Length: 258
Length: 293
Image 1 (tube, each protein chain N blue to C red):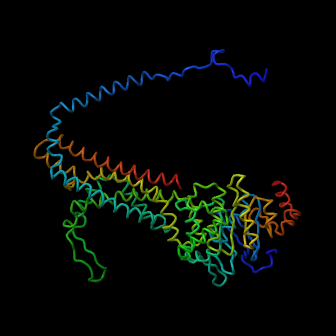
Image 2 (image 1 turned 90 degrees about the horizontal axis):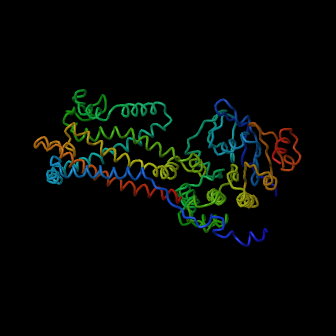
């Protein structure tokens, strides 16, 4: 089942973003459908991570619009203008959008179990006993139930990243953003994290994954988007973009990465 | 033959390299200097013990006298209260600094500039003489009759109040820096992660940022408490009966200047030693947690 036919989960239209005088996003437009796995590839500095951070408004945008489930994230529309909403309002929208970071960003002062519980308990007001049950089930799913009482620093990078995925899943998101989830890992730990993400794909989770793992992208993605210099150069099925690229820039990138 | 080399390791003494003893290097110069220092130290101790002008019996006599103990209590009290004031001010100043409002940031900058840029002793004396600027004050809502009537400033500005206020306001400028350092030490990725699971700003601060910041704030505050305890002796100049002022009051009458200053010094040393010990325990607690976590 390819996920490119379901309801639209994420819709970006002409998204632009400036850092000072450099425009890092020059009008990015794309749609992600329910159950779709989209991999964004491209050289570093192409704006792919920045675009991902705009989706849940960790970065603000300078033009265009971004909607998740039809809602603008971080903004309210009045007429043809977008007004930035309060952090409190944005926080509610972020509950449905999970995010997994390159540097894991587990909370070092909390145990593994507490890291996974804190979202439901603090944000959703889930009773602790129930949140604990859910957290343990999720840790089981990522293969780390026996490390529930450890602190993040006691875990390997791969284990930390799997906990980070469990922490995100605990909020029962409808869309998960992965920002280079294996780039900070030692080579032997990459596969354990990719296999967890692969399982999520099999379960039909909607995901946008910024990655340098070409083999993985090819295998798991429904859609591959190639970005360069703040633009989408080309997008399509993995076979179209990675197997038979049309654009010169894409061909060059695919060549280099081999 | 190769196989011979592998199966028969070189026997011990046949080439003169086996079974040699390692003799540690002797540090002659270091040993000589150490002996000289011990002799000098002994001479100092001997002189202190035998020179009657040190007045050890006088030291012993006044060490636990009520006046000295009250002074010690006042020193501790003024230290604790001014540190509390400083902590609150430090948090407020840091919040102003981080508020994103240029005016608030400017005001906090002025505060830091003035109170870190002038001597504490001068600030103490100025505040003590504040009634020269504002002889009467009153609190109330402008253009109404609601509020207090005019209050005589000299009756409010007691040496105790001046001590706490001057030390606290001055220290607040330094505590702001300590708190700022603690908060900046929390990586930006922590805030990203907290936001990404839907936490609201207050939750991000109190559940994620503050518990991590406090780990570096508490040990650093320990240093500030020790400095504050010593700096509090400055309020003796405005006749606040702290430890130093109390011994001064005694030696003004009996002229046993040095013995009484020794009494004060021993008490200061005792308090700072206790504070340092407490600080070491606290620091170990937080670094161990840091290593664990």
